[in-house]
Image (cartoon, one colour):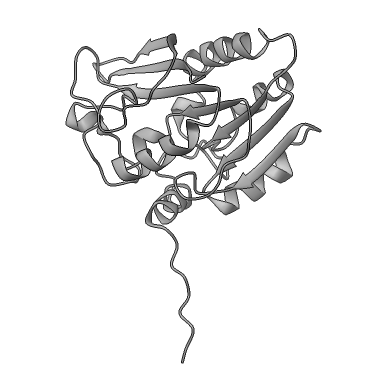
Amino acid sequence: MEKKTKKPWPTKKAMEQIYEMNLWGSNNAEFYSGDGSHQPEIVEPYIDVVTSFLTSFKNPISVCDLGCGDFNIGKELVESTKKYIAVDIVSNLIEHNKETFKADNLEFHCLDIAVDNLPSVDCVLLRQVLQHLSNTEVQNVVEKIINFKYIILTEHLPEGTFTPNKDIISGQGIRLKKQSGIDLLAAPFNLKVIQEKQLLSYPLNKNKGVIVTTLYTIY
């Protein structure tokens, strides 16, 4: 009997297609994670607030960047950590990052964060990742990240009040078209935290929503 080849997870295939077809733009780069990872007015304040948090500890903490993308942002945070583990679902992207970015405390891993076991660290970064995932996959991620002490979550949300967590099919799009966005504290995820602190809010032009970064302390 012919052995069947295991098909890639739909999300993995979708994300690979995004980079192969430059669906988030190209900027003449081999891998490009979109303007939201490169525009200085978006990127620099994020790096500032996350660096401020990471350097607030007497002893540096370990970090896992879930959905590290082209690493244009992560590369600025590595030196503020004890260990920085960068994860993405696209294998070619991870291999490119391994060759491009090197530091003694830096590791890259190709993982599906909704399926695979995650590295053990103090803090998880999730920057505009969950917004692309279905509710089922988000729930799978939530069940894993409750094991980490700190979560720094960044999501593209509608301005003003909105109905959270409307379901989507995983891929390039986000919930904004449904006038919705991710709220991990709301149903169906109901993440339990001991503290919630908004670190950053950046409104986009032309009523295109707001990018919000929130720090959750789990225990």
